[in-house]
Image 1 (cartoon, rainbow over the protein chains, first blue to last red):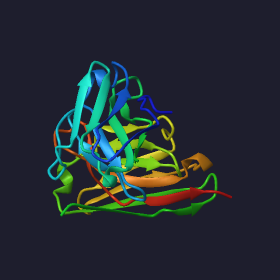
Image 2 (image 1 turned 45 degrees about the vertical axis):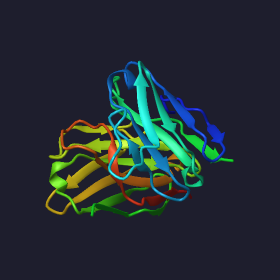
Image 3 (image 1 turned 135 degrees about the vertical axis):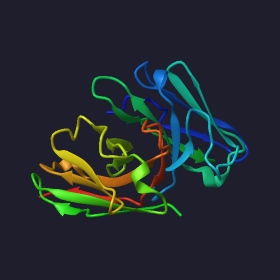
Image 4 (image 1 turned 60 degrees about the vertical axis):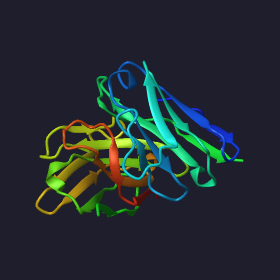
Length: 111
Length: 122
């Protein structure tokens, strides 16, 4: 059972903007870097955002990340049909059973 | 080009064992921490285990602790996951993934393999 909560789905028309929230706690998001992953159908996850708001080489600036307290947000501007995928937040959790944690995942649908 | 190629998946009966391998290339393997992440059919990502670059700093998810063992061979550029006492809920695609930095602190996973399917069923 994931300790990071995301909305199950978001949708928007091409060209519009969407945001995906990721809610955690002080033992994870509140004290560790957050990353975001995109998983296209049938493919392995791909790193989109690391260290809360940095983009790896090759990731367009339409994707952005931010954090505030124990929550994180992924923003996608100018939505494209190719953005239709599952998105996951991830971080480290410092609680007793320390380890990595992922969000519940959000399906982005382009209408 | 960084490549991670998993192997060793397959069909195994409940209570059985399986050893997954991840062959790494295109980077200095011994400098990076490595991880296993799994995804049950139709479900989300679940972190399984992390291992530091020199074989220290080992972490396991509670769901696999005591049953799975992560290891690496830096001379063979390979990561392993020994899975014992397998259960039906271990059925998933297992991905190996590289730490994004060589700092030793797990912050994100920048490269992923294509995954190998493990099915636990009688």
